[in-house]
Length: 173
Image: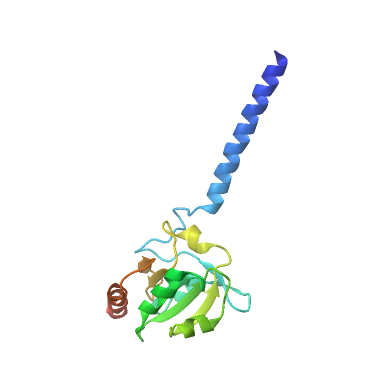
């Protein structure tokens, strides 16, 4: 009888530990409502790493100039098809590229003909933690005040991409 109670108590304790552990893990690996990027709100702090290994906050980097931030992977087939859809890239906008794979070669952007002002690495998984629908490529349109105005995830027709870029480039914030 005592043995049954000990086994039951042990199982209950193990279950409780599993539930608490799962809740803690989900809390640290999920986007929180306070930090998740939302259209019409300021871009949250998005720490990325530059080629020298220095951590840079994309939200600060985007401030002061209309910026297009493109999260991509050089090994992503959809990215290879979608990123050239940004061309011709409006001169009124700045392009920042963030690699998900750690490949920080600026040649990747140049090979596609993209005028990247900077190439960074998402070492901390900010894309997947900050967006409800994270996918590659993810293209963010951030105004000069740091407000996320629009975005695209995945593949889209060139006409749609160009319309969004043109409208963003000419819209007053």
